[in-house]
Image 1 (cartoon, rainbow, N blue to C red):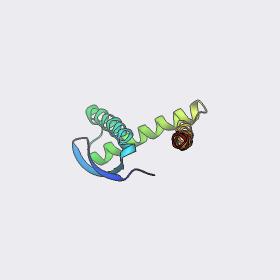
Image 2 (cartoon, rainbow, N blue to C red):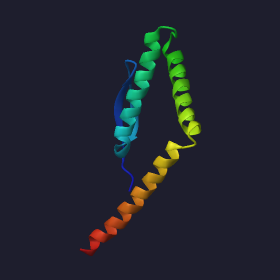
Image 3 (cartoon, one colour):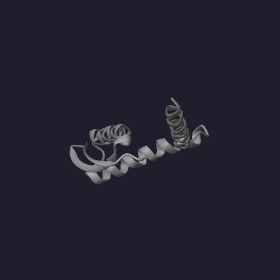
Image 4 (spheres, rainbow, N blue to C red):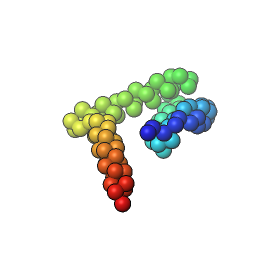
Length: 103
């Protein structure tokens, strides 16, 4: 059964946002927020880009470039690997739950 979505408050570049997040995804979301906030802070600190919207677009482009370089550079798709690991974990949880009922 999927976890219920809860609203959490995050801060990116000093601006607060409320977003819905499933409890099981909270830690990953907070890591993504910290990463994005760091990237945007680097761009803002360099002083070459003005305006939050432009900083966000530049950060998005940099992150997309990093993702595509990782995905295409090594021929390894980390997103696909994570999805497969999640499916394996779900199957293991299902099998182990059945085993617990035996005892």
